[in-house]
Image 1 (cartoon, rainbow, N blue to C red):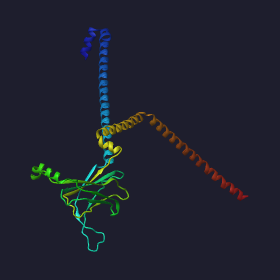
Image 2: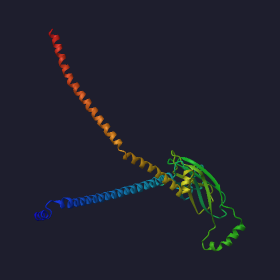
Image 3: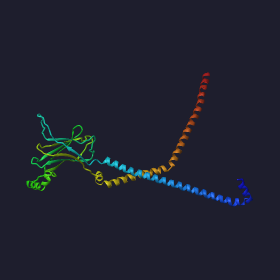
Image 4: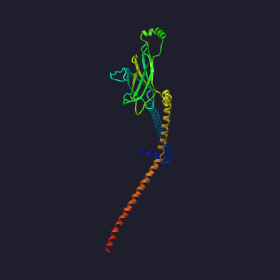
Length: 325
């Protein structure tokens, strides 16, 4: 450093070049470098802020969309009951004792309408149908089917009886059908049977005070022949349930859009509420006022306590003087 200073002293003894050439150039270069570094840091900070804001917007939008979908799915599965319930009916001949008065040996069955939980929704109308798979024999004529719905205490809630029979076919029609479907009948691809549908209840409503737990099926015909029986409980949807069941995609779009709209309104109002810091300043000012008010009250109480002892000391002296007199 001493050698460099000596050389500069010899070359520029009056410091003209150093003061008017090198120093301005160096100052300008340092200023340009500082400005470039400040711009670079500002651009980096701006990029980070933009990226963070974009990330927050994406996360909030993703959360809002999934929240609206979840709310619609929760509403759908809590509001919409199951459409169809199928129960197998195992009919048996009722055993009657010798002294029984009104007992008749008819085919009966008890079907449970619960499986550890109720599947009939209160206020929803249901259609209860009994499907009978019967052979086309001469013994099967007209018969009556009765259904009795009971609750947990085996109390009768509803009862219905319906008459039914096989569809009539003449002997000529039976012969023609037998010749036409003979190959299928021989190889077992077709059988001589009919499916008879008996609608026991057209508009059954479950009661919350006496919920339906089982149903008794009785066929009032001793000589009836059948292969199998099946009970179907079908929900009759009306109003909003009808729209949601028949147009699920449109209902889902409307429901999710509605939920999204209200959630966005709540988010925007919350954002403006938290972004406005005036309410924080108001709370701080109120707190300071409360603190000042409490301090003033304490000071006044201390002054009152300081004055009261003097009064107490004066009164005994006066009493003593009165006693003296």
